[in-house]
Length: 152
Image (cartoon, rainbow, N blue to C red; front, side, top):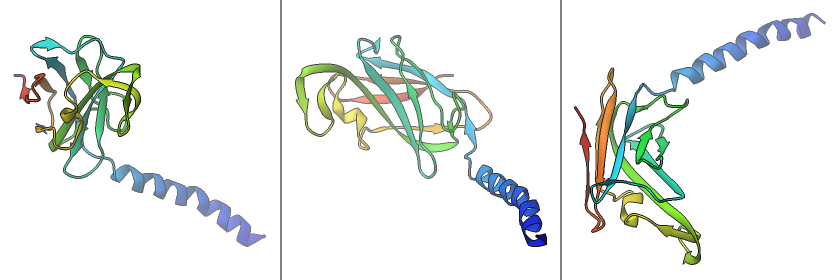
C-alpha cells in the first residue's frame, strides 16, 4: 500500500517535469505579418492560400492569406509569429476547379500563382529579427520571379 502511495505522490512531479521539459523546446518567436502581391496587386480571388516560413532548424510557421493579400504567421499559438533567424519562404494560392487534374498537388486544384513559389526552390528568403514586429511585402510576378522585402 505504501508503494502505491509513493508512486501516486511522485506522478504529479513527473508530469510537471515533462511539461517543463517540453516548454524548453519551444522556439523563440517574433511577430511576422505582411502582404502578398501578384503583379503589383494584392493577391486575391483564390479559395486556399498560405505563407509558410521554414527556419534553418526548428518549427515551421504558417499563416493564411486573406482576400486582401494580408497574412500573419503562427508557430505554436495563434499569431505568435515565426522563429527568429533566417528562413526559406513559400507561398501557395489555389482555386478549386473540378476540371483541373494535378496528380502531384491534388485533383481539382488550379494554381493562381506560379507553382514554383510553393516549392523549396521558391527563391524567397527572409530574416526574422527578435524583439520587433517583422513586416514583409512579398512581391510575386506571373513570370515566376519574386522577392521578399522588409518594410520599415
